[in-house]
Length: 71
Image 1 (cartoon, rainbow, N blue to C red):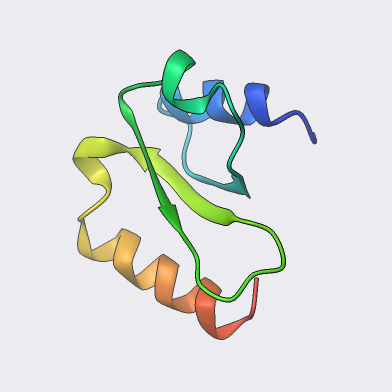
Image 2 (tube, rainbow, N blue to C red):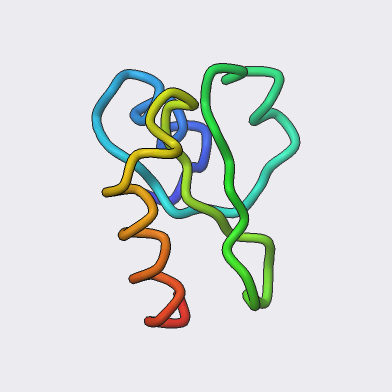
């Protein structure tokens, strides 16, 4: 799947996390999700998760792992 709207909806429905570009409707359609940018990407890409889960240790581990892989 490559439709960011569908991926964001899947995260909102509790089906996991997603790495995707920031898009204009994200905050408008999914205010309960947290977008945290990943550094040094050619486009603005971040890890999308429920805001309540964004500071969990497993999310930080995933973010660090993605960063080391240059995702």
